[in-house]
Amino acid sequence: MKITIIGTGYVGLVSGACFADVGNTVLCLDVNDEKIAMLKNGVIPIHEPGLDTMVERNAAAGRLLFSTSYDEAMAHAECVFLAVGTPPDEDGSADLTHILAAARSIGQRIETPVVVVDKSTVPVGTADKVRAAIQGELDKRGSTVAFSVVSNPEFLKEGAAIDDFMRPDRIVVGSDDASATRLMRQLYAPFSRNHEKLVEMDVRSAELTKYAANAMLATRISFMNELANLAEVLGADIEAVRHGMGLDPRIGSQFLYAGMGYGGSCFPKDVKALVKTGADHEQTLHILEATERVNDNQKNVLFKKLSRFYGGVEHLNGKTVALWGLSFKPNTDDMREAPSLILLKELFAAGCRVRAYDPVASSEALRVLERDHGAARVEEMLTIASSATAAVDNADVLVLVTEWKEFRAPDFRHLAQTLRGKAIFDGRNIYDPAEVAEAGLAYEGIGRVSRK
Ligand code: NAD
Image: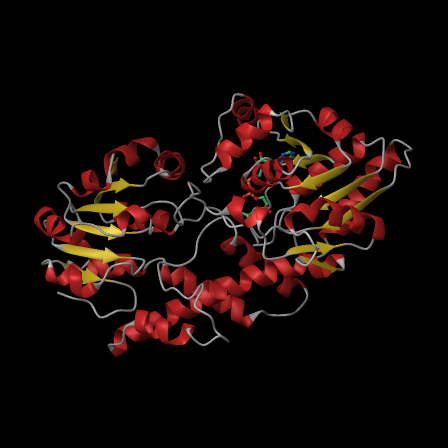
């Protein structure tokens, strides 16, 4: 099949590469010239395990094309995916500017029937708006080309995106048009041979399913973070509690980890957008409002522990803090809404110098931090270290922010010799407090009894 994907970001590029890998001819379109130029030169603009070889293989086979030209992209397509960003607007709602701009661009150009597929995360009712935007452009030029709009939200996880796309848990298709549904079945057959993973429903339910799933996951995280803070004052260990809870199959053990709060490009904006959708329809979403509040609070927890350790914020001035991990989770360079950004802001304000190391996200982090704080301030307060070991050199304490594999088994005795303040702040509960204490280091986790 000939497929056009509009928006060549985390979702668009992964979807495009995976559709090409099973034999389709895919054209990935983006308005960002720089991104498309990089891709044409074989450079992958994002870090996603396995993506580089997949893009290279399919581009070499002529099945994966890149363009900035809507004319070219629309002439190519039997099926057009919308995978552009839907960032939060000032009032929390999803900003549909990019989606509707792309829809108008489609309407201005199609000459033969197409199926338009909403893959971006969009509020209920967006398919109707996309349909109206395309129809509006067709009317302007007196065209009667047939098209349908289908909702097919994406559930891939950054860091495991290829595997998620190639072996999905489920493929949600919301469609009111039988022939468009048939096309979607055909398109997804290679990823679900007997269509057993294809979940067909109406368009509005499909749109809501994506928000419901992300809202549930975000709520689990906030629930555990709230319990972690309680466990701590009660002298219990949230890690033991998590294990004991998670073995109940009704609860399950996944997504039950206390930490520094959820971040990334999806949960924060999707929870906000769903709360706003509720408010727009006089349905207060109490649980989700609390989920957000708990999350905002959680992003400050580690900084508070650090201040307490030194006997007050004023004593942090001049301290050097080693930071392991910057990205919002391991295996990605995505810095959108990363909890590290909040922590860094607090550390800078308290007068701390930071020595940070991240296996892949350092340059993206620098770009975001320089945008937010100015290059001079970032240069003054932050050093990007070349390794985990280099980050702790001359540091007072270590803060573990992102649980990259390479941080899992450090040499605690070496850390005890190196860190002047002799303390580790474990924002992801990946270390054994007893082992850390035995090496002569103080330990602070999330929802655990601290060790001095
Ligand atoms: P992204 O920011 O990485 O990529 C979006 C791309 O769209 C950018 O490259 C941008 O230049 C391009 N774009 C914007 N307007 C355009 C236009 N009019 N025409 C062509 N290109 C245009 O975003 P993403 O992370 O890939 O997310 C895309 C959508 O998928 C969002 O709605 C997001 O919520 C959803 N989603 C994301 C993930 C994830 O893990 N990142 C997972 C599931 C769903």
